Length: 385
Image (cartoon, rainbow, N blue to C red):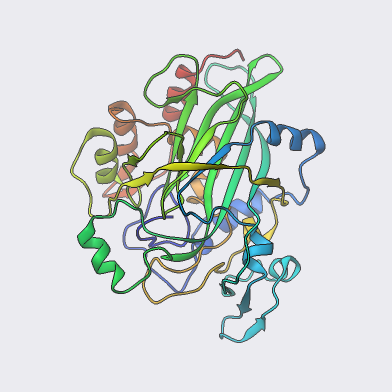
């Protein structure tokens, strides 16, 4: 995840001053209403959907010495204990059934106890199909979102943290184990009917720290775009220590990053504005390609929907374990098309920056209107309604 996570989940916008550690991010206003109107499904992907997820499964590259992704239940949940709001032990033999039985209690805390043994690398896939009112189309367009999660036992600080900050932070915490569990490391591949009835990838959205970043696929190179390999499998790099996902780049590469996007940090990322205090480059240096096993969990599983803490609670703010992986952004951003559209930005993209700054009032984000962002994407993607 990020240098400092003042909230317990990845978010695109941080409401400044919200640092109530008594409550998990799953209790942020708006989530209850969102899930009441959009209850997560309990079914696994159909064989056809599983085949689609397998076809576009990304290729994963690790840096030297990295443990790699793990099996959420076998390697993480099976090695730990679950406690209630009073700290009383519920069980030291936690499994999928028990975790799901307690997923709706925001006060429950799971603490991982690392054990010996090689982990089993997995990548978790889910599929969501949504009708979208696409600009220029007279009828709703059916988009398919393929989401892939990698799970890591812990998350450390970005490798590019300035030395003076690393020394100070290292005196009070383990820089390689800043917080337990990293499962917001996600990639969303969006498919649209490029030709009538033929869905093809149009975008890839990376979850990075407390924000997301979308790249559009296309033959024409350019800022904010990626070329899809001939085998349809996007290549991704795992960042040193922080686990963040980035488009593959051979050799050692610094990736400009911030802890979250507000007006100042967005200007730094896009227009070379002044660096905010919580800015530190991620570093990728891929040396090993691995092939995680593709696995599936129903969208209502505790992996996605757990409201408590899925990692140890620690004294320093930002070091607590996160809730379920579906609490990845603020409620107004939960529609997947919003995550796609608002996250398509690139260096020098002053048009996006202007739209982004218009979302703020008195320094805080106001109502999110995705229409101008979606119109930008629609203008840049070539397909027939």
